[in-house]
Amino acid sequence: MNRITSCTGCGHALVPMLTAKGRAELSCLWCEVFDARALDMAKWADSPFGKPGRTVRRSFE
Image: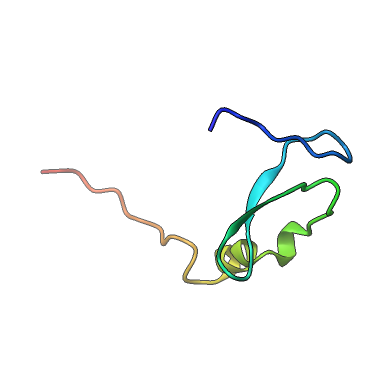
């Protein structure tokens, strides 16, 4: 886990991204120009089930 693989195009570190088959594949976020709002994780976070509900603080007494 200590090895960092660099992109041959720009030199930035490659980031593991999940493919449609569920496998991790190294990708360069700068060269491939990912739209963060279009990723599945961003869509999940915007869903009403992805956001945690507010909790009321109560004492232990």
